[in-house]
Length: 308
Ligand SMILES: Nc1nc2c(ncn2[C@@H]2O[C@H](COP(=O)(O)OP(=O)(O)O)[C@@H](O)[C@H]2O)c(=O)[nH]1
Ligand SMILES: [Mg+2]
Image 1 (tube, helix red, strand yellow):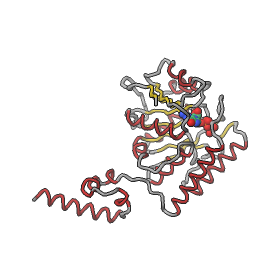
Image 2 (spheres, protein in one colour):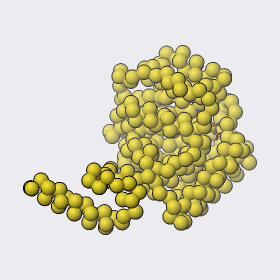
Image 3 (cartoon, helix red, strand yellow):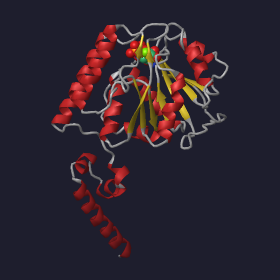
């Protein structure tokens, strides 16, 4: 994989009114977005909030990556992760999140690089996170239907996908498939522990689902979604089928309680890993009461060890 980026030492982020956010990053997955990418980056630079941008480009044949590299802010406030081949929206975000964590960003935004999501909504999403939400969802359906210029079949597909996802997963959100989200670092850090399998658009659903199940606070804000300005949608039949199947799996897992996200016990109680050296899945099957009881016993035995 060819990563084109450098350290982010000199970026100062002026996040007035966003007291709890120091370093926000917008992640822009791109595949053939040459008509949009520069305008998007410029719209982000013009925001009153200083925010860095990471473009995750899958070697777009139209030269999207080259446009990014030639931007005056490249390697200052705009970064590029270039991957060798088209590998899916979900995997682009997964790599983008890893990069963000490694480089010390505290909130990541997921956003299409085609002006369907309005960059001017970014400060509102960040504000919601600053005010305490772990994830802020930019919802197309919170106040009725706020979608502009979509062909009717696309709108029906989206409404149906939302209802289907809500029904099968139990998520209470008006827009569980939304692609415009701000996510706090503490959620990103836990993603590796969840059983997220989608490399495609299903990733957007899975992140919300596992974070919601894990008790993170998720807030929806209304946004207006507009059909892309230029270029073509990459949503195809196989991506739709894959996402639909994954939602069925999540639903079945929920019903039969098969959804074992790989909880790292060490984050809750380091003693378990350290003293017992047991497989975390064993620990996971213990009830909260058992865990507490065992932790107390361990603490007692530890203090006994120290005394003797
Ligand atoms: N890096 C990368 N980006 C992708 C891929 N598929 C889609 N994208 C980007 O993800 C965003 C959403 O895709 P889009 O075609 O707009 O989907 P739609 O909004 O559902 O029609 C756009 O910025 C695309 O360029 C992919 O496989 N890899
Ligand atoms: Mg789009």
